[in-house]
Image (cartoon, rainbow, N blue to C red; front, top):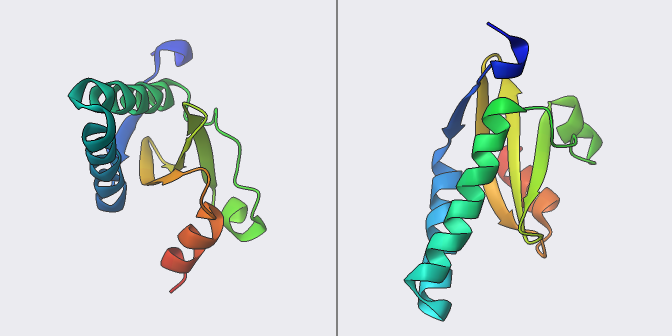
Amino acid sequence: MNEAAKRYSVRLLTPAQFDLEEIAQLYRSLAGAASARRITDAIYDALEQLSRFPLSGPVMRDRELAALGYRSIVVKRKYIVIYRLLGETVFIYHIFDGRSDYPTLFRSELFS
């Protein structure tokens, strides 16, 4: 297969699925269903990009997380998607509000 056409599997793990549902619910309650659909579509579009370019996000700044291969991408200048490429699969761990202390939140969950 042509490397440019290669696709990786993207797996949204349970915590990331919950994050996505909470984001959609927030937008739905604040601005309506169309707004919720727009933000979730933007997140899914970003995940689709990861299926083609899984190393496009920079490694996490935290040394320990970087050493474990965690990367992140920003969606709509607000949400941080934390993921890792393992083999042929991109695992999506969390989708955080970028205004939060997401590295600390993720580390505390990961290493507790």
